[in-house]
Image (cartoon, rainbow, N blue to C red):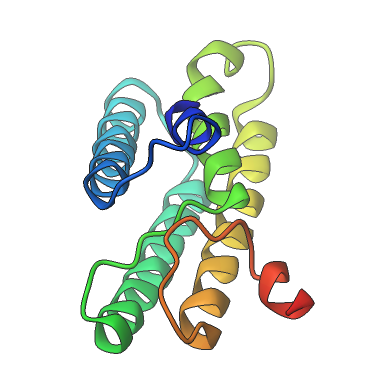
Length: 139
């Protein structure tokens, strides 16, 4: 989760590094989701919410691909926060109700999906390291 931050601080970024980071994030998401689905008995509302967010993201990625002719998975702050929450889920699900933990993750995942959609629809040029849609409001 800190590789992109370190690369920017050390001024050692590249298109390949951005691609590999996106690939690793996607792989992590599928492994984490698969593990959770196999190990836990998830509430049905959580499964429907995750499916809805996935559908929303696929629409966003399609819009990004149509506009920029490339995979438009972004490294926004909300995406990073959602990834961190997913990463921490196995450590906290015994301490916090799965309904509460799931609701928190769903809210942040939905906000990050909306943030990404707004970015790919408004941006004139794709910046995969855009921190948030609010960046475009300040310009």
